[in-house]
Length: 164
Image (cartoon, rainbow, N blue to C red; front, top):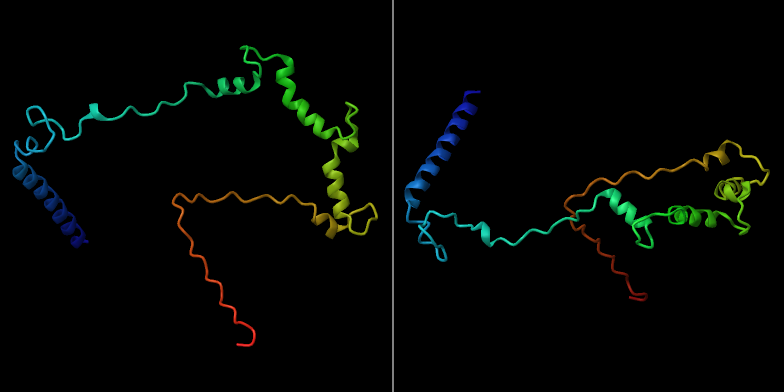
């Protein structure tokens, strides 16, 4: 345990000594000798006035952006037709025969197709093995790969020419 304490103390002593020697050797005239520096030499080597202006984010809030998506004619108001337009598109996709009404078969077309695909013996009933094929398979959330690394591509094996 005492070795760790001695090592930590020695490290702190080295850091302190480096800071002190840096100040002694740099001195007040060191900054003034940097090319392109103006003033009394006490200015920072990086001038904040020379930095470019950072890009500004949009001032629109989330609700304002959502409002703008609904306001199709850009008149500053969302009327009933604009508000329901996305629902009308979804309804039109479900209304297979185009009569403007949804019956149960149109509403449940995906579920009916899933049932038909699972019913292998076509007896209009699912046994346990057929039913197990209807389970919802959830996709696993991808793990964050913050630093993508190039994966080596395996070399294809050289094919021998026939007769060689």
